[in-house]
Amino acid sequence: MKSGTRERNHLESVALVSLLVLVGGTLLYPDTFTSAGIHLASLRLGVLALLFIVTAPQVLACVWINRNRLNPGVLDTALVVTLAYFLLRGLIAAREPNIVGLTGAYFLYALLLFYGFAIVVQRGVSRRVVAVTLALIAFAISLYAIVEFFVGENFVFMELIKDKITLPSRAYHRSGSALGHPVALGIFLVQAAPLAVFLYAKAKDYRARIFWLAAAIAAALALEATLTKGSWIPAASLGVLAACWYLRRQPASRRTVLVLILSVTAAAALFTAASYRNIYDGIFSQNRQTESIAFRQYMWSTSPDVIRNNLFFGVGMWEGGSAVAGVDSEAVAGRGIQHPTIDNTYISLLVEEGVTGFFLMIITILLIGFEVWRLARSKIATKSDLYIPLAFGAAALLINGMTADTLLIWPAMVLFWSYAGMLHGMAMVNRRGEKLLFEAGASA
Image (cartoon, rainbow, N blue to C red):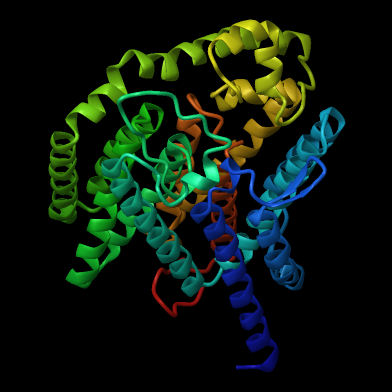
């Protein structure tokens, strides 16, 4: 191997580790829901900010050296324009330093993750490392979520999150695990669970298959422990779609799919029986109905007033919840809501970015979807490669966006832009006419 190639591969490996540390830190530490960190007036530098400072230089160096492998196209233009618009509008509207920092961080994170992963996944071995690492993180988070559910308290992270998460008096508990909040955990699980299912389907050794089956079951039980119906819907609908799609493509794999379905169903039934009262109260109690439905109805019905008054350019990133709540602040205060959110990605886009930002974002999402379409239609790309669970994970986030601000919740947005970058990178490999193998040590 030539010296230049060896050095480039080494730099890509360092960048890959840096990206996984950055993403892993986002998933394993509830920075979004804690006030801990270095405080400079009203600006907070949390753990994730410090992780970004440490990991970004390696990733940027890798992207710069490999810039000739990016082949910029329409998606790149749409992405940069969209994120630049969000940044500019957000900075103009920001009313405090912390919002300025969050807006700038969103811009930097999204670009770094998108192009960093677009480069590193062009090697087959890197794709495997990414898939296995994220699936292992999901397994660990799921196991803790299950333990937390039965204990009835997030005992590891409670001291960190208690100041920012108000826990109402209620007879049920919802797991937040390492992400700190059940909604964030639910969105993460529907994004990450397809990776465990993918690795289960790909496993050739029976021990590996049992391990990844356990990971998939744990993710399903953890998702139930969140009591987040907004995440259950994409999980169920996309799960059925994935099973039908896989059986159509791989009719000889009926046994594999049947074992997965029966195992998850049996485990969920036992889990439900063991914690029936908690789950029942967490779905049907009056507290839950108020928490889950009533406030969303209020925010959604009030949002059109704010949209009309800020039609073209919105109120700016991170300002949507307070702007909508401000229409009738007394009504919001009466509900005991300290940090109001719109809980709908698409309404939030219209409120915060106006029709300009809304259409820019929709165009970017459609172009990412077009990358998936081209991979699926390609005669070169292996039909069972990593783009499949990534596409399902990204789609789950977008469906979940009907009941949550998925693109504004930090762990969810970090995974989304990571997945989008990986899909973009694999699409570039495919356009060069190279096969998308998924074996350790395989070339891109």
